[in-house]
Length: 255
Image (cartoon, rainbow, N blue to C red; front, side, top):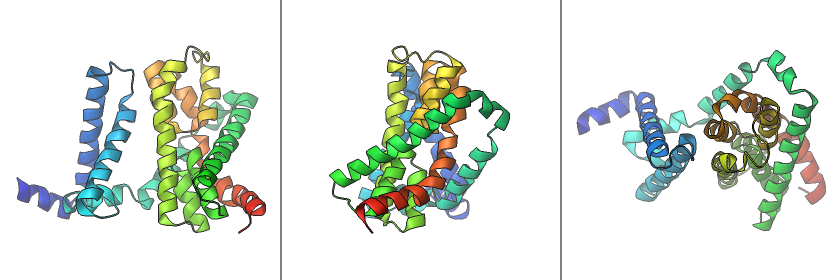
Protein backbone atom coordinates (compact mmCIF):
# COMPACT_ATOMS: atom_id res chain seq x y z
CA UNK A 1 0.00 0.00 0.00
CA UNK A 2 2.83 2.36 0.86
CA UNK A 3 4.50 1.79 -2.50
CA UNK A 4 1.20 2.35 -4.27
CA UNK A 5 0.62 5.67 -2.51
CA UNK A 6 4.19 6.78 -3.18
CA UNK A 7 3.87 5.93 -6.87
CA UNK A 8 0.52 7.71 -7.04
CA UNK A 9 1.95 10.84 -5.44
CA UNK A 10 4.99 10.82 -7.74
CA UNK A 11 3.09 10.28 -10.99
CA UNK A 12 -0.26 11.88 -10.16
CA UNK A 13 0.48 14.39 -7.41
CA UNK A 14 -2.45 16.67 -8.22
CA UNK A 15 -4.92 13.77 -8.09
CA UNK A 16 -3.48 12.77 -4.73
CA UNK A 17 -3.91 16.36 -3.54
CA UNK A 18 -7.56 16.40 -4.56
CA UNK A 19 -8.05 13.10 -2.71
CA UNK A 20 -6.50 14.54 0.46
CA UNK A 21 -8.63 17.69 0.28
CA UNK A 22 -11.73 15.57 -0.36
CA UNK A 23 -10.97 13.43 2.68
CA UNK A 24 -10.49 16.51 4.86
CA UNK A 25 -13.78 17.98 3.61
CA UNK A 26 -15.65 14.72 4.30
CA UNK A 27 -14.27 14.47 7.83
CA UNK A 28 -15.06 18.15 8.46
CA UNK A 29 -18.68 17.81 7.40
CA UNK A 30 -19.09 14.69 9.54
CA UNK A 31 -17.74 16.63 12.53
CA UNK A 32 -20.10 19.50 11.71
CA UNK A 33 -23.09 17.17 11.45
CA UNK A 34 -22.52 14.88 14.42
CA UNK A 35 -20.55 16.99 16.91
CA UNK A 36 -21.79 20.54 16.36
CA UNK A 37 -25.21 19.62 14.92
CA UNK A 38 -24.68 22.05 12.05
CA UNK A 39 -24.01 25.10 14.21
CA UNK A 40 -20.43 25.32 12.91
CA UNK A 41 -20.30 24.87 9.14
CA UNK A 42 -18.13 22.14 7.67
CA UNK A 43 -16.15 24.67 5.65
CA UNK A 44 -14.99 26.43 8.82
CA UNK A 45 -13.88 23.15 10.36
CA UNK A 46 -12.09 22.21 7.12
CA UNK A 47 -10.09 25.45 7.17
CA UNK A 48 -9.02 24.86 10.77
CA UNK A 49 -8.06 21.25 10.00
CA UNK A 50 -6.13 22.39 6.94
CA UNK A 51 -4.16 24.92 8.97
CA UNK A 52 -3.45 22.30 11.64
CA UNK A 53 -2.20 19.81 9.03
CA UNK A 54 -0.06 22.48 7.37
CA UNK A 55 1.46 23.36 10.75
CA UNK A 56 2.11 19.70 11.55
CA UNK A 57 3.72 19.18 8.14
CA UNK A 58 5.96 22.21 8.59
CA UNK A 59 7.04 21.13 12.08
CA UNK A 60 7.77 17.55 11.06
CA UNK A 61 9.86 18.48 8.02
CA UNK A 62 11.29 21.84 9.02
CA UNK A 63 10.13 23.17 5.67
CA UNK A 64 8.12 26.19 4.59
CA UNK A 65 5.32 24.62 2.54
CA UNK A 66 3.43 22.61 5.13
CA UNK A 67 2.32 19.16 3.99
CA UNK A 68 3.69 19.86 0.51
CA UNK A 69 7.21 19.34 1.91
CA UNK A 70 6.31 15.69 2.52
CA UNK A 71 6.90 13.82 -0.77
CA UNK A 72 3.63 11.89 -0.45
CA UNK A 73 1.68 15.17 -0.44
CA UNK A 74 3.82 17.18 -2.85
CA UNK A 75 0.83 17.71 -5.15
CA UNK A 76 -0.69 20.03 -2.56
CA UNK A 77 1.97 22.56 -3.53
CA UNK A 78 0.48 22.73 -7.03
CA UNK A 79 -3.12 22.64 -5.88
CA UNK A 80 -2.50 25.50 -3.47
CA UNK A 81 -0.18 27.44 -5.78
CA UNK A 82 -0.58 30.68 -7.68
CA UNK A 83 -1.86 29.02 -10.88
CA UNK A 84 -4.91 27.44 -9.24
CA UNK A 85 -5.43 30.57 -7.16
CA UNK A 86 -5.56 32.80 -10.24
CA UNK A 87 -7.81 30.28 -11.99
CA UNK A 88 -10.21 30.46 -9.05
CA UNK A 89 -10.28 34.25 -9.27
CA UNK A 90 -11.11 34.15 -12.99
CA UNK A 91 -13.71 31.41 -12.48
CA UNK A 92 -15.40 33.43 -9.76
CA UNK A 93 -15.59 36.47 -12.01
CA UNK A 94 -17.12 34.46 -14.87
CA UNK A 95 -19.88 33.20 -12.57
CA UNK A 96 -21.16 36.71 -11.87
CA UNK A 97 -24.48 37.44 -13.57
CA UNK A 98 -24.68 41.19 -14.29
CA UNK A 99 -28.49 41.12 -14.37
CA UNK A 100 -28.59 39.49 -10.96
CA UNK A 101 -25.96 41.88 -9.63
CA UNK A 102 -28.20 44.83 -10.45
CA UNK A 103 -30.71 43.52 -7.93
CA UNK A 104 -28.34 44.54 -5.15
CA UNK A 105 -28.75 48.15 -6.28
CA UNK A 106 -27.37 51.07 -4.30
CA UNK A 107 -27.42 49.00 -1.12
CA UNK A 108 -24.95 46.55 -2.61
CA UNK A 109 -22.65 49.32 -3.84
CA UNK A 110 -22.56 50.98 -0.42
CA UNK A 111 -22.00 47.64 1.32
CA UNK A 112 -19.18 46.75 -1.07
CA UNK A 113 -17.51 50.12 -0.59
CA UNK A 114 -17.62 49.95 3.20
CA UNK A 115 -16.74 46.25 3.19
CA UNK A 116 -13.62 46.92 1.13
CA UNK A 117 -12.33 50.08 2.79
CA UNK A 118 -13.05 49.30 6.46
CA UNK A 119 -11.28 45.88 6.61
CA UNK A 120 -8.28 47.40 4.85
CA UNK A 121 -8.03 50.15 7.45
CA UNK A 122 -8.40 47.66 10.31
CA UNK A 123 -5.85 45.26 8.80
CA UNK A 124 -3.33 48.04 8.18
CA UNK A 125 -3.79 49.33 11.72
CA UNK A 126 -3.18 45.86 13.16
CA UNK A 127 -0.03 45.61 11.02
CA UNK A 128 1.25 48.87 12.50
CA UNK A 129 0.41 47.67 16.03
CA UNK A 130 2.65 44.63 15.47
CA UNK A 131 5.55 46.66 14.08
CA UNK A 132 4.94 46.50 10.31
CA UNK A 133 5.14 50.20 9.58
CA UNK A 134 6.35 50.26 5.96
CA UNK A 135 3.86 50.92 3.17
CA UNK A 136 4.31 47.55 1.45
CA UNK A 137 3.69 45.48 4.59
CA UNK A 138 0.78 47.63 5.73
CA UNK A 139 -0.89 47.43 2.33
CA UNK A 140 -0.38 43.67 1.99
CA UNK A 141 -1.72 42.79 5.44
CA UNK A 142 -4.56 45.29 5.03
CA UNK A 143 -5.43 43.66 1.70
CA UNK A 144 -5.47 40.27 3.41
CA UNK A 145 -8.17 41.60 5.71
CA UNK A 146 -10.35 42.17 2.62
CA UNK A 147 -9.98 38.51 1.58
CA UNK A 148 -7.21 35.96 1.91
CA UNK A 149 -6.80 35.96 -1.88
CA UNK A 150 -6.39 39.72 -2.21
CA UNK A 151 -3.52 39.69 0.30
CA UNK A 152 -1.01 37.57 -1.63
CA UNK A 153 -2.08 39.02 -4.97
CA UNK A 154 -1.37 42.51 -3.63
CA UNK A 155 1.87 41.42 -1.99
CA UNK A 156 3.13 39.89 -5.22
CA UNK A 157 2.30 43.05 -7.13
CA UNK A 158 4.07 45.48 -4.81
CA UNK A 159 7.00 43.29 -3.76
CA UNK A 160 6.10 42.14 -0.25
CA UNK A 161 8.19 39.47 1.48
CA UNK A 162 6.94 35.90 1.88
CA UNK A 163 6.36 36.20 5.67
CA UNK A 164 4.24 39.31 5.14
CA UNK A 165 2.17 37.60 2.44
CA UNK A 166 1.72 34.63 4.78
CA UNK A 167 0.44 37.00 7.45
CA UNK A 168 -2.00 38.52 4.97
CA UNK A 169 -3.37 35.08 4.15
CA UNK A 170 -3.66 34.25 7.85
CA UNK A 171 -5.55 37.50 8.41
CA UNK A 172 -8.04 36.68 5.68
CA UNK A 173 -8.49 33.07 6.83
CA UNK A 174 -9.11 34.24 10.40
CA UNK A 175 -11.75 36.63 9.12
CA UNK A 176 -13.39 33.89 7.03
CA UNK A 177 -13.54 31.46 9.95
CA UNK A 178 -14.86 34.17 12.26
CA UNK A 179 -17.65 35.05 9.81
CA UNK A 180 -18.54 31.38 9.26
CA UNK A 181 -18.81 30.62 12.95
CA UNK A 182 -20.36 33.90 14.06
CA UNK A 183 -23.07 34.37 11.42
CA UNK A 184 -25.63 31.88 12.82
CA UNK A 185 -25.32 33.42 16.28
CA UNK A 186 -25.90 37.03 15.22
CA UNK A 187 -28.30 36.46 12.30
CA UNK A 188 -31.47 36.98 14.32
CA UNK A 189 -30.11 40.06 16.09
CA UNK A 190 -29.14 41.85 12.85
CA UNK A 191 -32.24 40.80 10.90
CA UNK A 192 -30.40 38.47 8.55
CA UNK A 193 -33.51 36.68 7.34
CA UNK A 194 -34.26 37.99 3.84
CA UNK A 195 -32.47 38.31 0.47
CA UNK A 196 -31.91 42.07 0.75
CA UNK A 197 -30.22 41.84 4.14
CA UNK A 198 -28.18 38.87 2.89
CA UNK A 199 -26.89 41.03 0.00
CA UNK A 200 -25.90 43.79 2.41
CA UNK A 201 -24.26 41.27 4.72
CA UNK A 202 -22.29 39.70 1.86
CA UNK A 203 -21.09 43.11 0.73
CA UNK A 204 -19.99 44.14 4.20
CA UNK A 205 -18.23 40.90 5.14
CA UNK A 206 -16.58 40.34 1.78
CA UNK A 207 -15.23 36.83 2.31
CA UNK A 208 -17.08 34.48 -0.05
CA UNK A 209 -16.20 31.34 1.89
CA UNK A 210 -17.10 32.92 5.21
CA UNK A 211 -20.38 34.39 3.99
CA UNK A 212 -21.55 31.28 2.14
CA UNK A 213 -20.59 29.00 5.02
CA UNK A 214 -22.23 31.23 7.60
CA UNK A 215 -25.41 31.69 5.59
CA UNK A 216 -25.58 27.96 4.83
CA UNK A 217 -25.65 27.31 8.56
CA UNK A 218 -28.23 30.07 9.05
CA UNK A 219 -30.60 29.64 6.11
CA UNK A 220 -29.41 27.93 2.90
CA UNK A 221 -31.93 29.95 0.87
CA UNK A 222 -29.93 33.11 1.57
CA UNK A 223 -26.59 31.77 0.30
CA UNK A 224 -26.93 32.92 -3.36
CA UNK A 225 -27.83 36.46 -2.32
CA UNK A 226 -24.95 36.83 0.14
CA UNK A 227 -22.49 35.26 -2.28
CA UNK A 228 -23.69 37.58 -5.04
CA UNK A 229 -22.23 40.68 -3.42
CA UNK A 230 -19.40 38.96 -1.55
CA UNK A 231 -17.97 37.52 -4.76
CA UNK A 232 -17.17 41.01 -6.07
CA UNK A 233 -14.74 41.66 -3.22
CA UNK A 234 -11.92 39.57 -4.63
CA UNK A 235 -11.97 41.36 -7.97
CA UNK A 236 -12.40 44.82 -6.47
CA UNK A 237 -9.72 44.18 -3.83
CA UNK A 238 -7.22 42.89 -6.39
CA UNK A 239 -7.86 46.04 -8.42
CA UNK A 240 -7.67 48.77 -5.78
CA UNK A 241 -5.37 47.35 -3.08
CA UNK A 242 -2.08 47.24 -5.04
CA UNK A 243 -2.86 50.52 -6.77
CA UNK A 244 -5.05 53.13 -5.06
CA UNK A 245 -4.72 51.82 -1.50
CA UNK A 246 -0.97 51.32 -1.81
CA UNK A 247 -0.45 54.83 -3.15
CA UNK A 248 -2.54 56.29 -0.32
CA UNK A 249 -0.64 54.35 2.35
CA UNK A 250 2.72 55.28 0.82
CA UNK A 251 1.69 58.94 0.74
CA UNK A 252 0.83 58.77 4.43
CA UNK A 253 3.76 56.76 5.84
CA UNK A 254 6.34 57.19 3.10
CA UNK A 255 8.16 54.49 1.14
